[in-house]
Length: 112
Length: 116
Image (cartoon, rainbow over all chains, first blue to last red; front, side, top):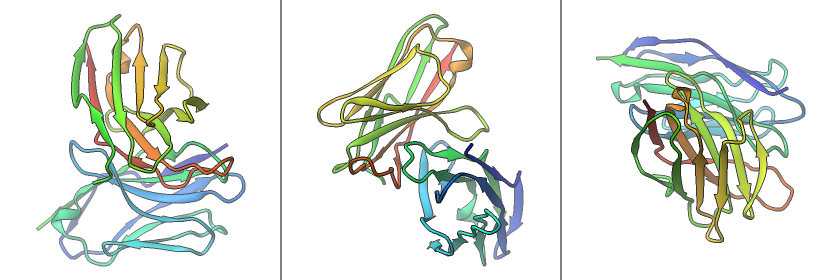
């Protein structure tokens, strides 16, 4: 079946620290992979995506590389800001699929 | 902003009642998916509508039903509400071309439902 496992939080970092949130997946074929971010009281916003192996998605200083050999899509940012505090969700949609499968989310708090 | 809107933003119901949630999809999108997000969890797929027909369903009972209208807006109906139905309900719109899979889904802000 299809599933996403992401690192449990909560994660607390100081401003300008390096961020890694691990995400691994199980899927048949070649899924598309996504990171969404959810700010308090809001819906999900697309952060970045990658649709094939070795693709790197990037946005707002965040990056993630689609690694088929390790079935991973880890989220990284070199220098976090207080405004990055949110819950981050890793997700996949199967090739020719019609739904998204989400991880349980990782809460990030960045302190000044 | 994604252009996906949902109404109402908040709702309080009592057990056994029925509720209808509404979603307007982003311009140019023809597919709407609904998700339930319990507190502290990731969203769970309820179902998807494409060309006004249900096109895939997650592990939710038949008392969860939906509609898609010719303008691609959608409704989620839940009958016989239970306490566990309390959650954030998210609508996501996307563009589907024929039998090809759906790519990026764009989410609305959600409707927070509380069942007492």
